[in-house]
Image (cartoon, rainbow, N blue to C red; front, side, top):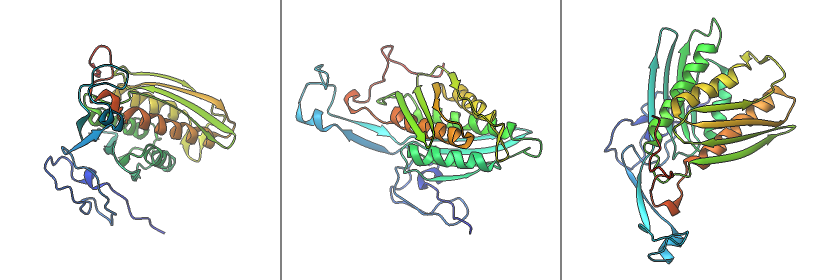
Length: 270
């Protein structure tokens, strides 16, 4: 049975900055289910109930800047074309967990579904590559493109939590992910995957995927395996924990009132 692709209308309308708020059918071929999402360039006003009740005082006792603030929709789109691969990625950080991924690597498609579902991101990935050689180039370039799309969607990172921490179990496996959207790329990966392959997927590519994503997104990422002896379970728990930690880090901290979560006053890739 063929499953129709589910595509966020906000993604399919990129890069329009004046699109209607009404959901429209996707521009991507195939039947799509439209759901309300803020289009690129639109704004959402966030209001803290605590700040609304306590006029002039911040949540930590400091003077309040404002009891609400506006944020723009957070969308990223990247097209990466080389002699080895052709990759198109779109991501909506404020989505509902819709995934439409066809990478030519079935196991990676399954993992990207976890990223969308558990992060509540809308993720669109279409890729072709020299998988007749192996999956290395496609795996790397897809991760590079996703990292760049995240970088675009985060913008100046005003008002976000910045940090994320989640531990996900999957049967006997448990994986902990800690991340910081600091603008400084770093990966520490403590996975011990017992088999060389899951299906046709080379398990060495898991660490390489996250290293590539870290490099372009400007993210500090620590992955630690707490338990597990089934390769599929370990990898899937990793992607689920990463999705939840990234969701936590990208969500808004209303007490910040749209300020940048850094004592330096800036979070950037440079």
